[in-house]
Length: 324
Image (tube, rainbow, N blue to C red; front, top):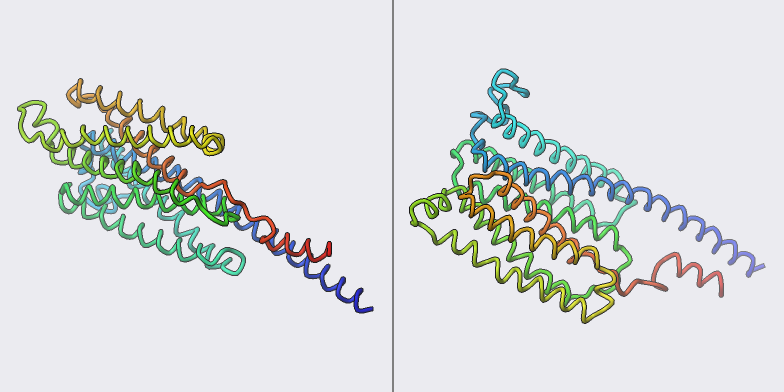
C-alpha cells in the first residue's frame, strides 16, 4: 500500500512537472520569437541611423519627437525627411516591442526564469536613455559626442537582446567555456571602439577634411589602424576553432559569416576612401557589416553548446525516481 501511494505521488508530481515545463516552454518560445524580431529591428535601426547620418538628414526634422509638428509630415516629405522620420519610427517600434516584452515578463514572472524580468527592465531603461539621446541629438544640433553616445546605447541594446535570446536557447548549459568567451570578447570590444571612431569620423567631418586638405587625419588613421588588430583577433579565433575541432563543427556557419564579413568590411572601407566618401551605399554597407559583425560575435559569446546538463535537469530527476 505504501508502495502504491508513493508511486501515485510520484506520477502526480511527474505530471505536474511536465505541465509546468510545457507552460514554461510555451512562454519562452514567445520570448524567443519576440527576441528575434527585436534583433532585426535593432540592426535596421542602427543601419537607418547610419544612413541618416551619411545623407546629412539628422536635422531633417527640426523638432522632436514629432516631425514638423505631425506624426507623418506629408507636406515636407523628401528623402532626408523620410530617413529621419523612418529612423524615429523604427526606434518607437523597438521601444514598444521591448515595453511589451517587459510587461509579459511581469505577467508571467512565475512561469519564466527569475533573471528575465530583471534583464527586460534593464532593456527598458536603455530604451529610455536611447530616446533621451535621440532628443539631445536634435536639440544639440548633431553634437559629435551625443551622436556617439546614441550609437553606444543602440549597440548595448543589440548586445543585451542577443544575450537574452542565447540564454533562453541555452538554458541547460551547466558550465560555459570562459576562455572561448574571452577570446571572442576581444574582437567585439575592438569592433565597438572601431564603430565609435567611425561615428566621430563622420560626425566631425574629419574624414572629408583629411582627404581634401590632408589635415586632422588622426581620427581617420586611427580608424584604419584598428582594422589590423580586429582582423588578427578574428583569424586567431578561426585558428583556435580549427585546432579545437568540436568548436569548428558547432559554430561553423557563424565563423564562416565572420570571415565573409571581415573581408567585405575591409573592401567596403577601401571603396569608401577611394570614392572620397561620396558614395553613400559603401558607407551604409560598412555600417551594416559592423552591426552584423557585432551581432554574430555576441551570439558566439553567449552561445555555448557544450557541457549540457543531463541528470541535473528536473525532468531527468523525476525519471530516475520513477525508474528506481
